[in-house]
Length: 217
Length: 394
Figure 1 (cartoon, rainbow over the protein chains, first blue to last red):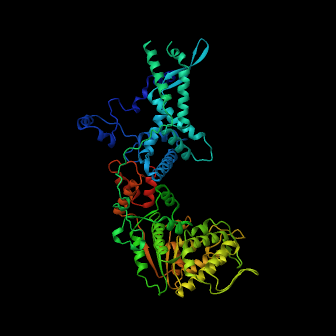
Figure 2: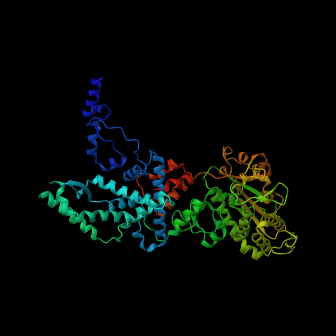
Figure 3: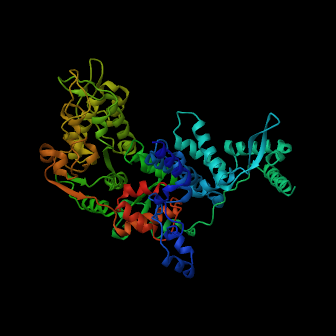
């Protein structure tokens, strides 16, 4: 019995489940969109290498988008992605309705109004991405809040999380799509609670800059 | 040390970011995909002809704008689907597409001999193909061409979600006083101008109670206003009004356009209204049903009847087919038997393309990768409602 137990532990340490993964020489599947960007010589590279199976949530339609997919995953609760998809598309509809109406009511500043909800979402996320973060590090028995730079991936995660948190925080009588839509619109225009939160984090980082060296010493 | 400096650099970047103007608008739209044409009203998908009477095959798949005051007059009490109303609000212009079923119907109406008994036209088709909007187009024609409109925006509302049901004076019948009053208000807003013009008078005296009565020779407006003011008698007023209208039009004093959306609700096997003994009531025991069945009969002249039969006017278990015979049942089918069926279908290729162009023009579709139109066509099956739903999040 003990022998089996040891084998089980060893297999979990050395990652014996490699059978379920694609070997490293497999290439990522390409979408039509990506293929258009590549020139022909680059494409020929893919002729003779094996390609991984496509992910089942990726698609080539007008409706698919990288950031939309990510946002959808963050909205999802209990694996109910169909609901999340509905909520997000409803959010986009509300954004578009607000923006389109504004556009048509004031024909003078047509250049200033963006009706593309996806672009607005991207803009909102970019605007609310933090550069630094505070982490608690223990030095000499005291916990210091130390400013630490964060990776690009984490900054995107935080931005989207803050957007969603702000949306969830509001009055429960208003539906999520509506709340989220206004948060996105605010953030895209560089205003609102999410941007304020980001600025607060940055301010704290700046005031704690004296502790910055605790990160490595 | 080097790392430390790098870090400081990062921090100073933060402070510069903090100083930027917060209110600065950073969302400049890119140049719109379509160039704004100077004369937007005569685009390839628009027509400047705003009179439905002048629409012909030339204008098929083109959009025309309903003048705002006319839209207000005809559609304030309903008549356009809720989501279409919303779309009109976002696009800030009430636009309708000229489609062949509406043209067919208009052609029949224009060439009809009004001295003959009324012809019943029945619009039928699958869910979301545009039956109500076809009716709206024809209603616009009627309002312009001096038809008195007897328009029921959505008959199933009375059978499915009435405001209040109370016992009528007749034994075993149920009144829907609030809905009847709402309909009278709708009738009044639609026809106020024309009623003033025509000076129609009632033929007989109506006694509502000991103290209240409408004498013979009083104008129809007075009758309607009495119904609105005394909600208890709204249903009786509706019955009186419609019988008066029939007589007046037969006498040649006015012409009437009857438009009832979801007409098959009057022949549904059951309603959601409960009687005193907690039983579901059949539509023929609702007092409001009777006048509208009466006016769809062919025993009067000088008018047209446009009825639509709809799957979603029924409840679950009765929604298998959109064909009039199935939806109306034997009784209903026999009631309107010699009728002209008009099939409303999904978009044609031309109409679909025109609609996409319209959406692009209104900045409603913002993503235009190659082949998006094909994709939308495939996914929506050229069904107007499905297309509307799909495009919402684009």
